[in-house]
Image 1: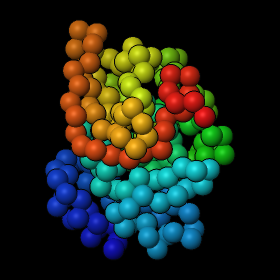
Image 2: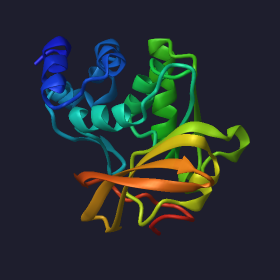
Image 3: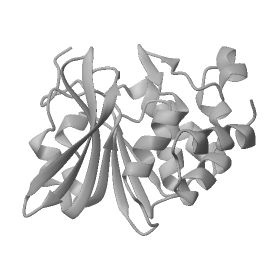
Length: 209
């Protein structure tokens, strides 16, 4: 399946945001998977990227991205850079993207890919994503690509009024629900989307190693 055929597939799964669909056409997923898995880049499955981490299946990436409801002028924080694919998509949908990765080798590799592809509005930070990135807060949107026990208060504090956070939450890594939170009057109104399975969100305000 090539990228254009896959775009039609994404629409069949409920992706209706034209800007999100266009971003998927612009970002080559083949650049973000391991060489041995390039032939599987457009299969709708998660794939390993090394260091015990994965790149999520594209339909889930698209759904999470669509839930952010980005218009183009936003400042977005991503927790869990991983392969860099999600940040690459966000670079076409927002004004500025900040992405945090705790594993330095993955962060460094993502930087190289972004440079190769000419993405200049992404800043990669190596560190504990559960703390957020206070230096550049507040954010219009936050996306977390690892499963949390609950939504870290640090992330809620760094979200703008009316901002949205998309995050997998569960009391165990095997029992996660994708949630969307909208910040109103300093608190989140939370909506459950669907069961998901992500690697654990590790850090001070997440799971321990």
